[in-house]
Image (cartoon, rainbow, N blue to C red; front, side, top):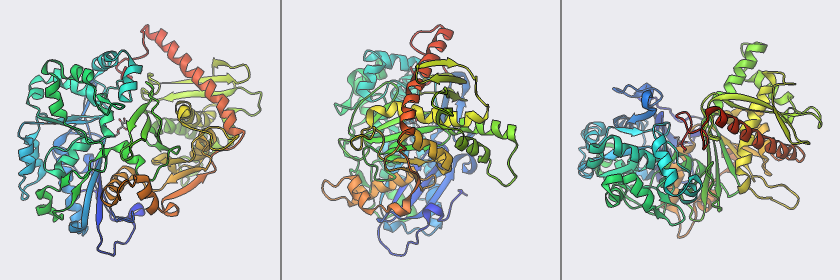
Length: 603
Ligand code: XUL
């Protein structure tokens, strides 16, 4: 049985009327989730299927399989098919009246690709509602696995992508990102070389998001205008495929063939793709006029979990760290990502994606608990860490003339910057602008609590500095609001440091949707697509229905004059520190062009 959840915290509304409903699906690495909402944005049903706990017949761990010798990480597509029937079956058991569902939309883990065989559309259109999807659709694939975003097997392909347009900066300028192992273009290139027969037999290629939409639609759905930017193939300013990158990716099989595998991309994220596949009407009693909306990536869906305004920032504090902003400015850089905004033409989604986050903080937390012993058996495991964080002064400086303490904490190899796993400690003198690798004056591991959280926030501030603006005369450039989501958002001590370093003139907020941000964003996208008036933007429609007092909680004041400026000095030291570490590592490795080894992510 799926590990279903009856309405809980985020899904608590009584669904009394018989009005329309919308479903947002989230096909992520570890689970498939379905969240049902009303047009007033109340969540009324939630079902989920945990791949490790609930799937049958797949040897997976954390939702994926690995081939360590080649740094491959992939997921069996059949498992996702199994999950979709189970999740819908669970919603049916919960009593969901599928006839009321007016629209479905999804969020998919980004970059993963699904390879369809020649007869795929025939299979999807002719499904037998008496049988499960897994039994019928698995045979329509030309390859059983979908490369996962954690895959690191494409170093050679990344180098070729970076070179194709003249360098990482040029590739980032055109596609929004330099080459990354997980991006779909390098993945398709490797697939084409490793499995030439399967490539030849492939009629269409889907992203995880468009795969989900294809099942609902009964034919291959186009890519979503935002998620397509996670491929290193889409020319963002031109709004079309980049022919040179397609030529590289297609190799001997040619561009026209690859173009037909990829299909056309509609530029409206709210386009009605068509009515739901008869399979779902017959098997689950969906209304035959239910409309399928393009599913998007999980990160683009996350920024749709609230009417995020340009200038607001979202920080997802999970196992990894993600920083998202909606912005009208396109300022590509090899260390960041730009995507088209999933719903609003003229806006972009800016993203920073780190591998390290919660796990790194847990290491420091454990070291502190080992030193101090747990305060009591009932206290939170974080109480010593939080106490250390709150009693240590900003940048570890007791007085203005003290050195600032800073460091990098990467238990896993990091993407931003591209650096091996390791830990580094530095003292920085902001008056002389000098830096020294040392732990002189550090009370370890106590001082590490502040240093690690600050280092994570300083990296975000450094890399988003070009996109934030001064909100009023005399006030330094910073985000308007900072929204925290994910596990770490529950920690108020971390929120305080986030506010000190990042600012936020209107404060730091916790978005109280539990772990459901992606599914919620997808469901809101469906509401907008089906209920918008001519020209009405997502932000206008969802903003009008959004109940701030119910959905978000202010957890920190944000901008503190004086402290914010002190961290402005710390950012300078932090940038110097990163550069110095990278240079030392480059010397150590004796390699040019940074650390592109199997540990890093992309060239
Ligand atoms: C983003 C990325 C991850 C996945 C997680 O580039 O690779 O955030 O989208 O599912």
